[in-house]
Image (cartoon, rainbow, N blue to C red; front, side, top):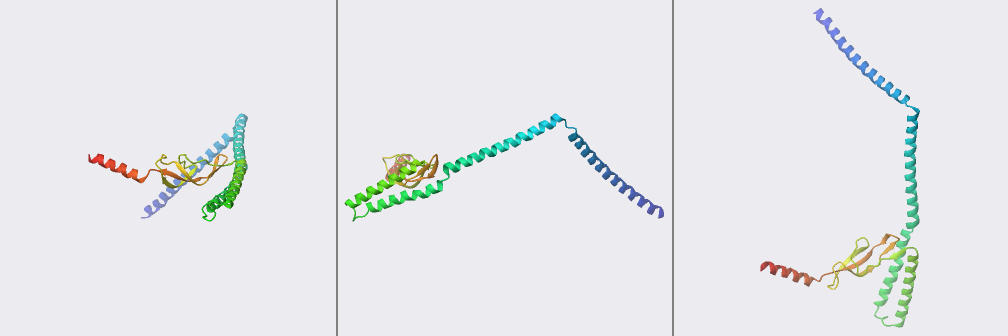
Length: 213
């Protein structure tokens, strides 16, 4: 019994010692690798250092140049389109003038009177002056009547039966749209043409008759 008890501690000691030796070997290997990396850094030639500095300077200059271009673009946009919100609000003046004109034209008591004609003339003059002021500031109305619907500039509000026009043609302008330079300020609200329902029914009936025959 005494011999077996003496052998067990010896075995345990050998296992612990071997594990400690492995840890020491790993730490020594890591230390040696770190020393070698430092040596490589220290052993850089002056030419290598110059190239490294030139590369860093080139990257820094490129970043500064990109920032300068972004700043110039933002400054240009602010100058060119900074009044977009104000211009969009100012368009309400034209809308209100148009509504006032329609109300007066639809008033039965004022129809065919000299007072109505003079009032409408003055409203037209004010409207033209406003359009002229907007045009001088690069805000121009969109010409949309008799053109194909373009979702980039127009917004269809209704469809109107019209066999004289190709389907999708703008035949009514509900609210005038505007551009500010090359950007859309407000889309035109329009009504577009479509084929009459009778033609659609006749065409469907003709197709059914052909299939039956």
